[in-house]
Length: 235
Image 1 (cartoon, one colour):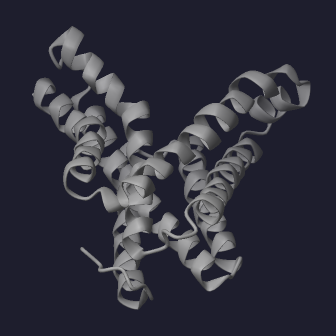
Image 2 (cartoon, rainbow, N blue to C red):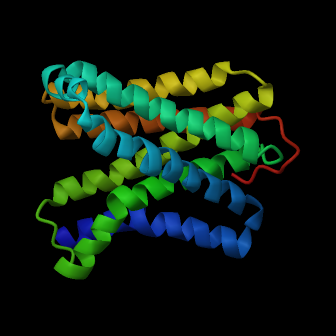
């Protein structure tokens, strides 16, 4: 059972992002740039900037320790707003200045998959691969492993809709859509941390994330229907 759950999560968080990359390289290079820029956005604005800021630089300040340990709810909001600002502004800057001629619906789709895919691979996929190689898939917590895979798949869908919102705003030359993406990202991330502070059951939290992903998928279809682009929509 543990082996199967590890394979399940490995398939979603490691194999799937690489499979999409392989598909684009072999069969559809037109959208490869968007996928790679999506991955690069997460690496630059999370792994190389926000994470070091949160984990290395800010702990040197007493106010940060007081915030983290004495004001957990404010800290949850702080984590949510920094994640939203770094990722969504990063998304906006990369699309606005490096993808000016790649603003089709499918570019937004693959950009979001690249962003969510590299996040899944780094945060969960590598750990699942480690479990397979060194522990023959025995993870000690099969339920948590399944939930990790479901969460990563849901998060990829959410990253897709956020990417679509930001790119649609750039197409419409309206900053409002960026603000919408920031607010949605902030609400989701902060809610998850606050739910943990309230000791909400992990399954309930994961159901909440899945519901958000389902809503995101519905809005992806809505954006697809009204997207104004000369590029052929392939989904």
